[in-house]
Image (cartoon, rainbow, N blue to C red; front, side, top):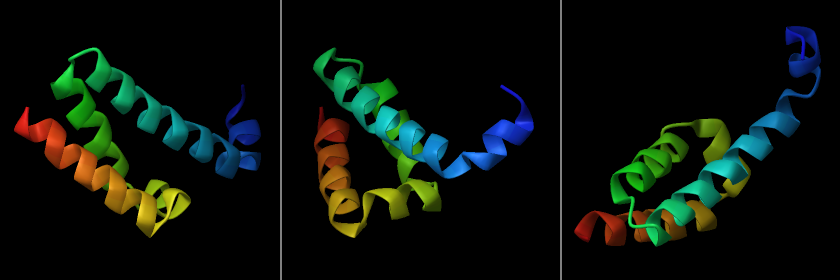
Length: 72
């Protein structure tokens, strides 16, 4: 894929990446890979675009999930 193609569909790819990070964080939790899960959660929270894609409510739920993962 060329850089121009990526730029044309940047919004689409950001949505896909955001969804992938959420699912991978959940999968890592189920697989007891808590450090990897925490990294994915933080990657989501540190990216304004991903937070806007998810919305405030979903981000709040994910932050609650993150706090539970950290306790483990």
